[in-house]
Image 1 (cartoon, rainbow, N blue to C red):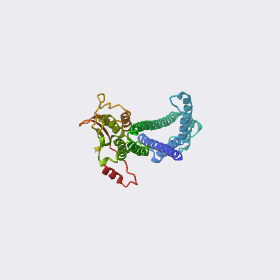
Image 2 (cartoon, rainbow, N blue to C red; image 1 turned 120 degrees about the vertical axis):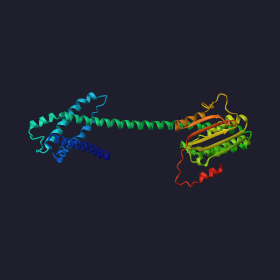
Image 3 (cartoon, rainbow, N blue to C red; image 1 turned 30 degrees about the vertical axis):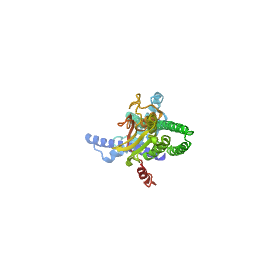
Image 4 (cartoon, rainbow, N blue to C red; image 1 turned 90 degrees about the horizontal axis):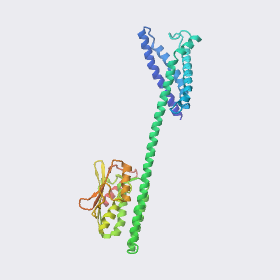
Length: 376
């Protein structure tokens, strides 16, 4: 607070010093033209005295401006007060100036009361103008500051709203795949208890990974792939040898930031609407970098898009709707998400997002990335 006060005072005296310099140059030039030259010392002495008297009065003027704001709502109430204020401040400043200017100055040869009053009245309009300029500068800076604060506040509110929407979407996704997995387990409890038990163990690992990443909206692609692997292990228990899984992941992309739980809904959609319709099939997950973009693909050789689905709307469902909404919230128009028929049959889901490497932690030994790459 004290630092801001000193900065404000320094700005006031700097501004008035600049004003005095300009007026001293003008006064020296005018006297030269008039044939009555004056020294630089006299010109600067008179103008600096005049300006610094206003500088001493400026904090009081600013206090009046803050205390009695002349804004659009109640300007007519405070206008008379500022009229009186500008007259009083102008008279005080001019009186002090006349008394301080050296008697040898050609401007003021007499200092009697009548001459003093006449000088104050003659130059009153100039003092009123300076008072008004001080008010205008203050209100201009004040409104600009309020405008900037409003923009920052609006940006913060917009960011909080986006984060709240993303959290809500993630909260929808987590129970969505959880309920589907529990449904798969329930179908195996009586038919194949051992498989159901193995599926429950994989589900516990899946939930552990989900809780570990619960705090972040974006995670490294390596973590997202690990989560999808756990999910596919559950589905592989259900389909047994009828489900083939392939990962084609460029090692350079493993550290890229991706939205948390962005691939799992696509894989789940491929299994439910593609593989399940044919009682088996193949799923391939790809990731590669293309310039400044990251391309993520989930392909299946299932039944293909239904007649009502297209690349614009996609197959309706919570997972795909939330995937689109989350990509829009995080990347705006800097992303692309399509759901289309694959070239060799089945369906391809493709996501293009900006490639953003995740900063390495200081304690990371770098082995995690290589291990992930080798595993794939």
